[in-house]
Length: 219
Ligand code: G5P
Ligand code: MG
Image 1: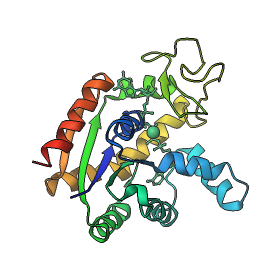
Image 2: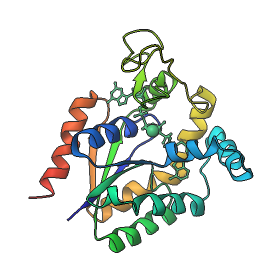
Image 3: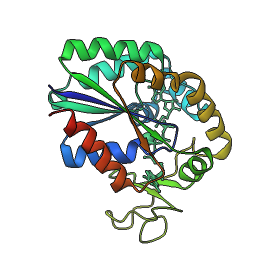
Image 4: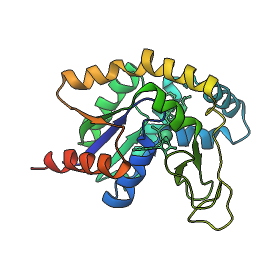
C-alpha cells in the first residue's frame, strides 16, 4: 500500500533536510506546506499579504487555506505512489483531514518525529541558509557551503536566509509548536503509527533510520 510519510518536529528539527533526501532517493515527492505557503506569500494579493504576515510572526496559517493547498497538491499524479508531508498536519483539524485524505487515496500514514533539544534548534535555525535556485539547505555552523554564503551546486548564487529565522521569531515558532502541534505526536503514538528519531545525529544516520521504518513497514 502506498504511504504518506508524516515528518514531524520543532522548527529546525530537520524535516526539510530529510524530506529532500526521501524525494531524491525514494522518489516520494516532498510536500512542504511552509515552502508552498512562502511561494504563495511572494504573489501580490490580500491573501498573500495575510500569509506573509502570519509566517513572519511565527503563527499558523488558518486551517482552511492549508488544507486546501494540501488537498490540491496531493491529488497530483506524482503523489500516486506515496508522498512525504513536511510540516503538515500541525493542528487537530489538519490531522483529522489527513485521515480522510488517506482513506480517500487508499494510503497508509506513517508518522515520524525528529527530536532535537532546544539549544540546538536555535543554532540550526539561526545558521540556516538555502539556495534560491535548488532549495538545498545549509547551516553556517554544522553544514556550511564550500564557499561562504554561496550554493555548492549553483556557481555564484548567494544563499537566502528566511525572514522568520531570527531568535525572536524562533521563540514564537517554538511556542506555537509546543502548544498546537506537539499534542499530535501523542495522537499518532496512541494509534501505534509513531516512530521516534534522535535528531541530534547526522542527516545520513537519520535518513537510514527513516528508510528503515518505511521498508520494515513493507514486510
Ligand atoms: P515551515 O517552513 O514548515 P518550521 O518552523 O516547521 O517551518 P523549519 O524551520 O523549516 O520548520 P525544518 O524543515 O525542520 O525546520 O529544518 P531544516 O530546514 O531541514 O533544517 C534546519 C537546519 O538544521 C538547517 O540549517 C540544516 O542544514 C540543519 N540540519 C538539518 N538536519 C540536520 C541534522 O541531521 N544534523 C545537523 N547537524 N544539522 C541538521 O513553516 C513555516 C511557517 O509556515 C506556516 C507557519 O506560519 C509556519 O511558522 N505553516 C503552516 N501554518 C499552518 N499549518 C501548517 N501545516 C503550516 N505549515 C507551515
Ligand atoms: Mg522546513
